[in-house]
Image (tube, each protein chain N blue to C red):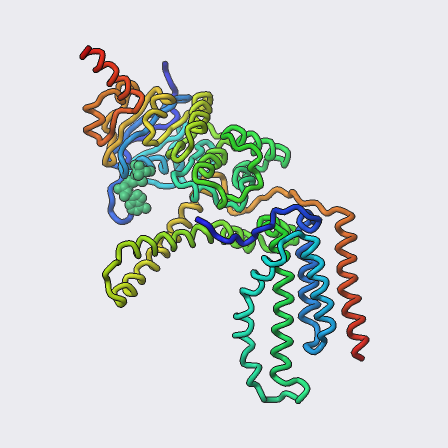
Length: 248
Length: 254
Ligand SMILES: Nc1ncnc2c1ncn2[C@@H]1O[C@H](COP(=O)(O)OP(=O)(O)OP(=O)(O)O)[C@@H](O)[C@H]1O
Ligand SMILES: [Mg+2]
């Protein structure tokens, strides 16, 4: 079945795609942190970050429209969560009104999401996992992510097949009956997932799994990449310094 | 030919937790280097039987692998010797990339990085998927998944191969490649399948299993050319033989 994949375009060939995932993860993290630590009113700083992201997107050759669409999907959630700020009147000075904070949060989150979307569109998920592992993130956590990535589509497929099978046979049934017959479906999905888990564990044991996860290291940090990465971090720091000294 | 026993099953019975009696009093022997086909209709217990060969399921009765009874203590050893390919490739392939999956068992044997890479390359070559290392498992077609599944056990070189439906959904050319591969391998091979022509081609001996019981056990050519036996067990003559039969009948008429 067709899905829009988590990491579509992650197999293109650009300098960003080729770079060491560890480097990319660290830079993305640094970038997101600097975005989040920007004061809500500093529009100039936000603009600079936007320009940096835009240039990275161009270098990466990922269609900008794709990044835009992907990142927009998250906006409703952010708006929903921060909506209450608009009506908040307690303990805020006139300068920091609710609307002001709301705008700041939406911009910050959106920029951060853009950075992460760029990361996931330029790095295949398995490489991100390998990067995380090399950055000494807990192996259990990585294994969890890896199963999620492997089976989420199958789960979606399974759910789709179940509902399709149900729809094609429930003609004529009333609305209430249709809703009632959905409940067992969820149960079946749960059981199938559970049984799949058992089988997968058996498959792992069959091939000598003993609780430790072994992987082969295939990533290597290149000098040139590191330099470019450092340059990028320097630019971000400079943007922060300049835009903030201006404000003072 | 005299074989020393590789797999020995004595009075094995197994019921699933819901009470389904999947195997009833099964006894069989498979010799070293022998290639045996297990055929039977849907739900006859083929997959259940294979899952006993490396201790994933443990029924009543005895299963001995290379002379040793399967116990908790030697489970790891047994699994090292028996390479099992599940019927459902999505159970078999659990890693994000093809490479990770084919390398899983060799890595668990603590082989060197170089050796692991060579093994993976070779195994993928053998199933006709060279260069598939970096593909994501969930992007593969069913037939490709099935072939990668087979590569995941070829890569660690077990003494016994137990394959559940190895040719399901593979295209004719790759089915042929698989058959040639299986014919060329000198290991002990057990194949559970509906592909009777595959059995006819690869396995000198076969067993017919139905409703959890072994109904026949003997030379493949004799069993699979016996229409009454096959019919009694909800099976049909293999295509290649039924065509032959037709030709013979026509000759008789003319
Ligand atoms: N997890 C399970 N729980 C309960 N019953 C099961 C389970 N798995 C299989 N069975 C039942 O056990 C019997 C044997 O199943 P098995 O999968 O071994 O058959 P099979 O010969 O491999 O069939 P197929 O040709 O369809 O693959 C069937 O009646 C099946 O319904
Ligand atoms: Mg089966």
